[in-house]
Length: 226
Ligand code: GRF
Image (tube, rainbow, N blue to C red):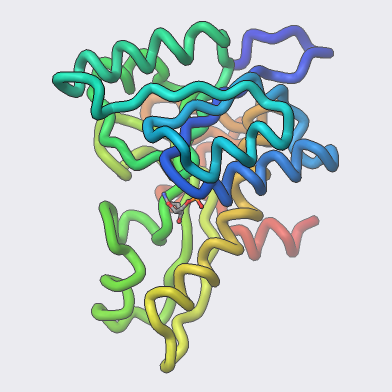
């Protein structure tokens, strides 16, 4: 549960590794009032990536903790924890952050760390989700926002958005269709956390005091109810 006082927006630290299009969607939603949080910092494990430029353009503090400068995961993760905790976040947001985190790191932020994955979990955890979805012949694909636990891409799901797979789709075309949905569902899930509408309890997601099903909420249904 966020520790900020009721009138203060919660503090958020966003971790990235690359282009930062999800970061941009969160920044845009924050600026137009749809995602009322205080983005304290953007931290990248890779120097010189586009996501850092996006943050600087939005006057958000940035930092780099370069994983290639550390001998192992444990020392890198501890350095990352030190950098993140300097900003005292209520919520850590993984946005295109492409590192597998140690259980020590995950435990430290348990219940206050979200990730977005470009697939309809539990299908296609891991990498190359679009290629694998096309190869498998499934008719639908999409994206999932979930709480991060020690099971990589296996944490309790908050929200999913589905897209159709079309006959002439390439992985690139499908990735773009999914990314557009990512940019809609991630700011919304972060908003729900900021408004204390979602929290993690016994490895389940509670939304407005009700336990969500394993696949979380469906974005299309959420929109219909609005
Ligand atoms: C996104 O599909 C995200 O789900 C995945 O990496 C891709 C790029 O994200 N983890 P971004 O443009 O860097 O936000």
